[in-house]
Length: 436
Image 1 (cartoon, rainbow, N blue to C red):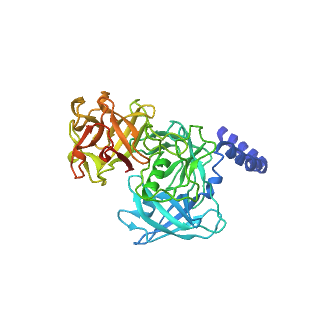
Image 2: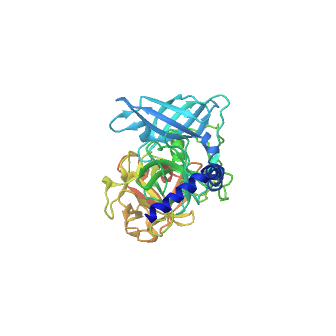
Image 3: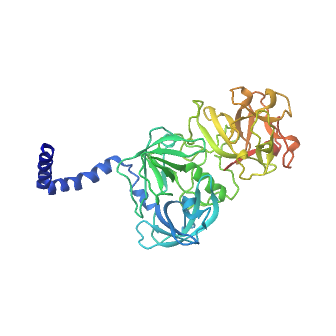
């Protein structure tokens, strides 16, 4: 009875002051949101698009995406989650409609063929409405892209340009190069929306599992767009961390991407150390692995002379399996991660399929000693320095022998062994990176 009486009093008091409370909430809730959320988030709603993809078997998938590039001032390029528009069971969407913020009606989008299941990334292209504008200087700082505990919001849920009042937290960048987040209220229909830290966009929503969500880093999206030959016009936000700009700045929103097949790496001057996958506006996003340093993963290492990729022979996972060149297909044994040991200079190169390091057999220092995979135990023969060869390729110099990784005899055939050799001007000493 005493509990009921107290409850009754509370209800009467709430009823008595209800209009005033409602007015105060109407005033202060937007203020609280404005104080908490990133300054860019309202502006980025113009970059964010709502998506509805129809399946051949009937029904539709809802999601979001965001504009990342523009061509000839007439076409907009949109990044979205691949599973929004493609499904293993239902096939590829037969019709994709998008809603641009502020435009009202939907428009039909073209689903482009290039996509990545590993990144859960697809590309849409739509006609740019007359007078439509979007923001390009929106990429978040390098620190926000990798720091545990970074506040993260998103845009897009339930057919609305929804943003949460309170942020979630970045908890890790996984070995598979996924952003792992906790506390974000994403739901079915949020996939493809931008993930936004205080300094700008750091990735794209791809998956949620209860209290944990996942996303694709924005730099991986940039690499894929450049590899596929699509324009990527996003640059570092003005408010992003003032990390020194690497050589070469991002193109404006309307500029063309590099030609299809160009390397996604930074264009350093000859002889400068090269760091893989460095984004415009700061150092690359990465995750700490075992306390050893940042990691840049999901890279194929392509020989510039043969156009074939490094791989342990037969996809082997054991110590001392020789490293050869083979087709750059989707086999996981072609994928490598760069674990940075010394600034942006020296790295261990870890095979993602085996977890073992690229090294020289027996730690040898002689010419033509074959490359193998071996336990990442800190031996200097497991460490490599990247130095530029020209405006798109680099050499891998073994720190133990000071010789370059190459293909035996400059061969261009499949399964030819990788060896170390003097760093001369032969094109077989030159390598490029390709995102998985």
